[in-house]
Length: 191
Image (cartoon, rainbow, N blue to C red; front, side):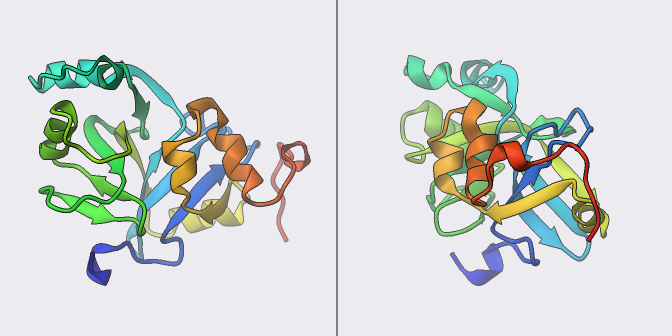
């Protein structure tokens, strides 16, 4: 992975943790992995919201056969409110897919169908999660929301994404800050 494949911006290699006071129903208690942050805006994949779909349903839509019931039964995440018909695969590093980008040394995001075909055939990345949709912010929008105390950020953590149960990801991300969850308040403030 070359440096040009990695994301840029001061929030590169970060996960956003929604503060308890964030009222947007798309992001209540969410954890969002930033995939891109530039002067033009930011794109992220929320990693702790169940879409209600299984990976088997996605495979069926794409006409992909998968013999592994544990893979077919995997939860597909709701990656965000933008383009909920687009799929994103967060996975451990594997080179060779058509459209991939390194997030860090432990996480890549791939948007091309070939990664799903490899997963269905039992030849995909060692660890992965699939999400539909993404979160997007325009120029300066995310920075403004951070100033308004809507989000905290922590370094991207593959253990939270690939190992933690979905329901525990927000609390696990908050714990990376060394903060007791009970100390987070529903109302933001300004310094």
